[in-house]
Amino acid sequence: MTFHILTLFPEMITQATSHSILGRGIRGGLIQVNPINIRDFAINKHGQVDDAPYGGGAGMVMMAPPIYDAYRHIGHNDAPVIYLSPQGKVLTQDKAQELSTHKNLILLCGHYEGVDERIIEEIVTEEISIGDYVLTGGEPAALVLMDAVSRLVPGVLGKAESFQDESFSGDTPLLEYPHYTRPPEFMGRTVPEVLLSGHHSNIEAWRRQEAVRRTQTKRPDLLK
Ligand code: 4FV
Image (cartoon, rainbow, N blue to C red; front, side, top):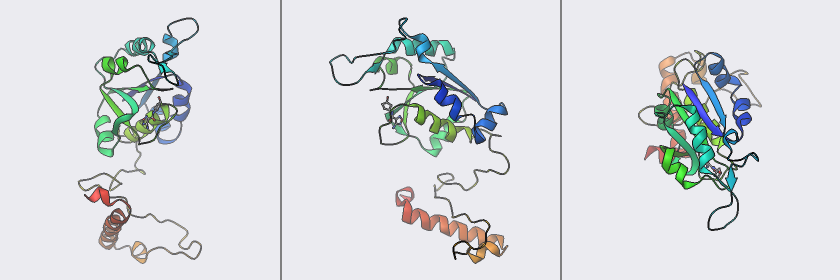
């Protein structure tokens, strides 16, 4: 799968995606990350890509033409175009699962007060938010989406990593059960006996029960 990112800060994307699982997915050829610098499509030799809002008001607005030309440059007019913005539906595991089935995804990162509404009307297929708070730019949100989606692309997660019974997946989205590893004792705290029993069905039952209990206490909204 290829992520085409329309951004004013391509280095933010390349730097953040070259590590760990995403980096390995890229080196393994399973994931491609193609940042396009909108400023390469500026309207004048001053590299202008934003201007004052019509109707006045604070801040600047990103202009539609440079974004449109950058979009055309990608050459995948059939790919979903996602605008990362607080106005979007909040990203969920199910949405990440759906997005992981596409060969190409185009991510539009806003800055300043946002982008001219007409570019949203012209090219954006859906708006996605990573949460009800305001960022300085869409790049951190694009990186969150790319991470959540990439790890669901077959082969990106190695054998050691699995997305079995993880949070928010499966028919009833539960939070994950607690994890323990060596040392057997830490600051006087021990490991639940059942996990040391080797009795797999008891361990499974305990983990399920813990997942339900935690979801009831921490995220009862998920059980509704
Ligand atoms: C955001 C979010 C977000 C809004 C103005 C970028 C900023 C600036 N994106 N989820 N929350 N974007 O705050 O996705 O253009």
